[in-house]
Image: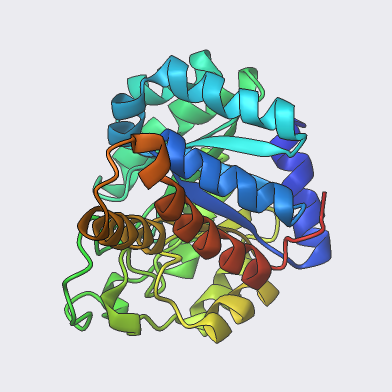
Length: 288
Ligand code: 13P
């Protein structure tokens, strides 16, 4: 299977950089992501969870993203992020997503393998790339108040490299998402990655691309090291959500403006700033 995502990932792999996967559930976030990608000449993934897709509308999201891609002439991989229902992923594929993430992290190993294989078979026939997940990535991008990660940052919960190899071989997923301390959410910058474990995973899965979830609140040095070790995709959501909400709150509190398109300018700019920062950190600027 050779598709747009594969070509972009091959290039990232060879160039030792990663492509940012930015969550979006609104016109405003799509604008922020595409403005940043255009400005920095970077490929990007735009991703949406099933809840985010439902909010925007699946056809609306696909068409909006494709319209920006065509108009701005930037490559965009559209990813259905953290789908737990095989039928929802199949629908995403039918509607024009380039990439789907089957999240079987809460299932038993055998059930996860069975369903991931079903998604892979369906997706590959249609030139769509599949990401698999085996160990539930803890934390939440909907809650940035939790301050202590110690309950989750236990290595017993982290991905076991040998098991990851078994999973990748049994399912044929193109991309693997491991849990190595990369919680979803900010968690007051306490997120440390187990880079040795990542190194081991990469050496056992040399032909599978590796994705890093929980791209908010990880130390920049850890992210850079993870990319050197083979990460080619980093998911980011919470930092963008927080930038949007805080800026919107400020704008609403400090002005009487009622024209939505006017008071959205600053929140869009704030999210764009986050995306630009991440694109530079991941090393994907100037790669188009
Ligand atoms: P953050 O919310 O920590 O950025 O994680 C996002 C993510 O991994 C989406 O799949």
